[in-house]
Amino acid sequence: MPLAMAALPLYVHLPKFYGDYLGVDLALLGALLLALRLADGVLDPLLGVWSDRAPSRKMLIAAAAPALALGMAALFLPIPRAQGPLIVWLGVSLALVYAAFSLATINHNAWGAELSQHAAERTRITAVREGLALVGVVVASVTPTLLGAPGHPETGLPIFAGFYAGFALLCLAVTMHAPAAPRLAVASAKTWGALTAPLADPLFRRLLAAFMANGIASAIPATLVLFFIADVLVADAKQGLFLALYFIAGAAGLPLWVRLSERIGKAQAWAVAMVAAIVAFVWAWGLSAGDTTAYAAICVVSGLALGADLALPPSLLADVIGRDSHPRPAGAYFGLWTLATKLNLALAAGIGLPLLAFLGYAPGTKSSTALGALAFVYAAVPCVLKLGALAALCRFHALTRRGS
Image (cartoon, rainbow, N blue to C red; front, top):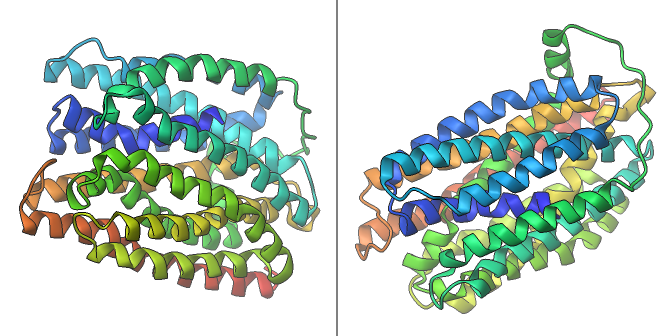
């Protein structure tokens, strides 16, 4: 729950909080986010390899959680207000948050993958984990709005950050009582060999391609959603409602995708979800001011598809790692997986925000040309990327059927 609660403010609220509320230049903000997310992503595979060699994943999570709580509080309770010192503060705080978040996430995911050797049970494990994560996301999506001034949800983020720090430490205490997973003996290798071993696995490469294309398709709307709600729909006061609808629908859809994956297969069920997301989300391109009912419906349908994005790819990865009873380094695989996630988000922020600034978009703009560019980048581009992810998933499935 606290990992998910941190992710949503980092990737959804942070650009608007610093770019609009605190007045940081969008192009400068996008460049900083790109640089930090790329640097953070490069660290992830190293953390994964190192975690495989550590005696306890629980202890690594215990070390990461307090640092994450401190970093989140610093990030949304900044002391400086001048742009130069504020950028430095943002950079240092975000670097701490990213490092702690990565260490905890990699080991939490690898821990789940190691808990069972049964394919169906792996899906249930990831579904329960992601279901609880969605509870955390829903809390993170509505709490700033409830705590902030009417019409200005960004003012609630500092209060949320203080609440988050205490809640993260409480959840850590619960997590420390969970059972440890069996650790399979994996052949030792030098760091470079351990880093590149997953990439030598053809199944992993094809699954990773589908995951990255799908992830970029999701990261662009996640980065731009608050700008879209505020300037295209002119419904800033309803941002918490829209986010809650999306993530609640995602949680409600998890049992559906688990059952469907058991009947037709995980890859096939994920493909069905991608098609549903494309059919629903492309309509957002044509929305304008006041179309809140239509957007709410899009949030619900695309949110249902989100459940598959959360539950099925990690379960497929666990199957890839644990296939044929051959021990593979789960931390190294999930380190690269986490790197791919960060690259998706880095590209979305580092390319999307500066591109919108170049096209003349700025928060609060009334220009129809600028708003049209925002709607196109927010809604149409992700659907094209989803089609690419669907093609990559079909190639992955074809390879699994050949028994590779």
